[in-house]
Amino acid sequence: MAYIVTDNCKDCMFTQCVSVCPVDCFYGDSEKDKMIYIHPEECIDCGACVPECPVEAIFPEEEVPENMQQYIQINSDRSQASDITQITSETDSLPTAEEKKKALGF
Image: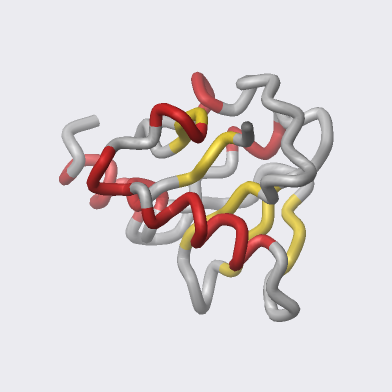
């Protein structure tokens, strides 16, 4: 089972989670998707990323909330897309990140 990035990441792209990942399984596109994804075949289920996410966007696959189940397939599809970039180190969050974080109640 892999970890899944959900909708809370959209318009944020806080990447503290990426900096602790031992296998570099994060992918993203700040311009098109405005979020990051976890490649399900590369994720080793260590969970190191979960406490690093300031908007609680990452869940173990079996704990993804019912209303976000579509992100299991979205992570798989988008992390393997040819137009996506592997993210291996922390980058600046999007300009909308703090606003989104506040709207989510964090």
